[in-house]
Image (cartoon, rainbow, N blue to C red; front, side, top):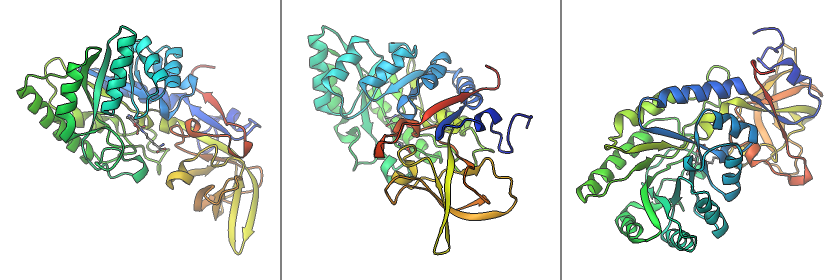
Length: 392
Ligand code: LLP
């Protein structure tokens, strides 16, 4: 590690910032991830759409826009943010079970690449609004393939008992309806089975399911221009320093090898966490260290409003004390200031002896961190601070 960095690799100038908490983004990690994605998707008819919900910070979206990725969006305001960052409308997909009329109109007026449609009533409304606007909307039907992604129950989406997509047994009927609607162009099929998926087996099952569907419809003379396999690739929350990037090669190879794309078909991916998760940390300052009945608590100035994942999903992020020089290790519960007992970042966390004023990094917080922050308790929203070794 060169001078100018602390023992955890954080730039000293970042550690000197006085207003905490803030999100720190390492643009070197983001750019390396994006370069790797480009390299792995250059050899075929592949497009990657960044799932903006993972992190909508304008600087992040424009970095991603510059590498030529498209965007996967879930609201009208996300469509506007992606346009503002320079992502062409033709490279946008719009997903979500509850699109409002205004949001549908926004998508149609910009002629976005594709609506990922989740229900028959939604399909009817898109057709009607496109008709009023004298336009044709391209749609992909979101299929719920009933595959268990073996991830947290709040972020699994492809099983039969949740609200997403159209069940396989209704697909034939919905395809027929879409093809008969005058202001709908059926472009393809969309799948998304869940998030923070680290094993390839659910993706292999997804490929097998899609192969079966394609065979079935090919027999009927129906071809799909686009197959969209969603996102969901997980990151290594336990080892942010040794694995700053997810296993992109294994992920893309799974689809390249197992999915039988047909002539002229394009394969779309919608990755969020895998692109931005590793580049961000939430940096906070220790306010107090207190002891209750033999248990030591570190109280930091970031709370569940800044990073909701631990409170909402019991998610584990690695914590590092960036400023302690002690070689003695203590065990602490690291908690925020918000008036909720779930406002805990880590139980029984082993850290060097920690004192008031120390800086703590909550790692792997680039995805679903800043984008899920709120002003609960009338707290300020955390700022995003960027660093790169090349642009000064
Ligand atoms: N496509 C669709 C249709 C999605 O619903 C999602 C995420 C993605 C793509 C991107 O998934 P990713 O590649 O980021 O896993 N807040 C939760 C995660 C919620 C994911 C919602 N959908 C968390 O903090 O873990």
